[in-house]
Amino acid sequence: MMFKDISRLQKIFGVGPLGAVISLGLLTIAAWVDHVLGHSTILANPAPLRVAGGALAVIGLGLYGWSLWTLRNWWTKDELCTTGPFKWFRHPVYAAWITFISLSLALYLNSWIILFVVILLHPIWHHLVIREEKMMSDKFQNEYTEYAARTGRFIPKMLMKKNRVCPVEQAGSLDNKIRRWVQDPTKILRPYIEEGMTVLDMGCGPGFFSIDLAQLVGQSGRVIASDLQDGMLQKLRDKIQGTELEERITLHKCEENRIGLSKDVDFILAFYVAHEIPNQEKFFNEIKSILKPNGRVFIVEPPLHVSKTAFEETVKRAGDAGFTPVERPKVFLSKAVILKID
Ligand SMILES: C[S@@+](CC[C@H](N)C(=O)[O-])C[C@H]1O[C@@H](n2cnc3c(N)ncnc32)[C@H](O)[C@@H]1O
Image 1 (spheres, protein in one colour):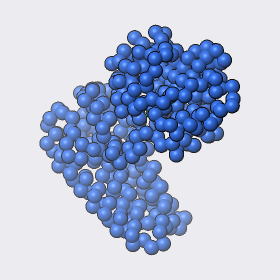
Image 2 (cartoon, helix red, strand yellow):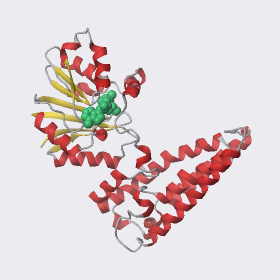
Image 3 (cartoon, protein in one colour):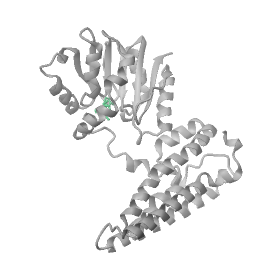
């Protein structure tokens, strides 16, 4: 459905009425469960929660009023609204309710059950606004893609992005049995890797994929495991030291915006890395210069902090550098694309 096909009411209210019905329904059920099961208190002394709840309600109502006030100037224009609270939130009207006012209610009522439902409202609303954002993207094209890349839906991006680069202390969350179970590296990579290949594992972290890649390329193949952080490379070094894989995996420290490899490679994996690279344009140009003509690039991005719009922006940047998407593989909880040189 294109933007011009949407009714005026839809343009004004968007998914608001549907979201409001779902949210009010869930909050009513939560209040009823809380009443029937016995009040599930967050704190024995509710006074601090009441103060915090009151403050959040004031902020929420303020944000709601500010959003409507800002929008009044944009109703008649056929332009993307990016001023006032829209500088930080793509949906400040909804954010006022789900991020602030609903939370204020849970805190004020001092109820775990209501708090749980308030947290649950976020993924529900994220899902609801996808269609609305798609229509905005159809209408405003690149302008919207860039706007989406710098704003958050219901929480400003600057609050979500504390650590742009995944810290070494979190290496354990990248290499563990649960992840291996849901994102088995061999299963994910086997369709693309042949014995004897030279593969670049870009932003290898603690080497969750590098080790399986080294097994897949066999004795005659090579894996270049490249990362910005010495601490990540050290974790991988510790894993392969004294094993036969030590010969096959070359550890390579790169710079933030420069990989610095001269060797040609058959395959490049960038798993959960692209969003951490500050200059993606430079990145795609550099990998193009080291990829063999029939080579492939596999980009995978995580579900929460990389939105669909931001992912498509990355694919577009790859396109601008001369890559074409050839496949959209399914990777558990992720967004993925396989690229080849045009
Ligand atoms: C979220 S981790 C993912 C690690 C690994 N690919 C995985 O999926 O297990 C991102 C890794 O990319 C690295 N990284 C971030 N920015 C980078 C850059 N500009 N160049 C190279 N590596 C980078 C980080 O140091 C970190 O180890």
